[in-house]
Length: 93
Image 1 (cartoon, helix red, strand yellow):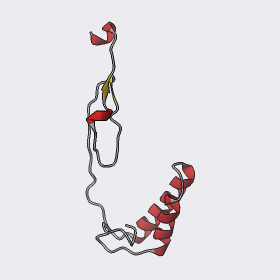
Image 2 (cartoon, helix red, strand yellow; image 1 turned 120 degrees about the horizontal axis):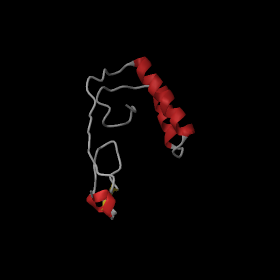
Image 3 (tube, helix red, strand yellow; image 1 turned 180 degrees about the horizontal axis):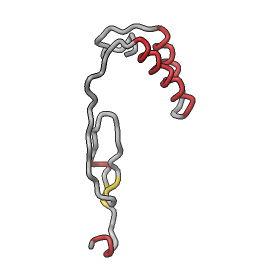
Image 4 (spheres, helix red, strand yellow; image 1 turned 90 degrees about the vertical axis):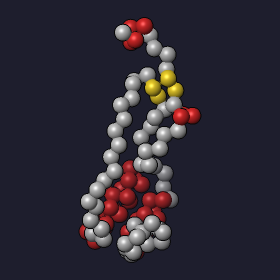
C-alpha cells in the first residue's frame, strides 16, 4: 500500500503510512521494527483504503522427519532446502 509501490492498485497515498513503512525498512527484524509495522497497519485500518474479502490460505501435512519446509508469505518451497532425516526403528512403526 506504499504510495510508490507499483502493486498499490487502489492508489492509496498516505505520508504517515509511507513514513512508517520506510522507517521499518531501515531496521532489522525484531520488536522495534514490528512496532513500526503495527503502527503502519493501524493507519491502514483507520483509513480503510481497501476492504479485504479474501485471504490466501495454505495447509501442508509434513512428517516430523521432513525439515526445510519453512512457512513464507508466497508459499514457495524449494526442494533444494528440504531434507529427510534418518529415523530410528521405533519411529518407523
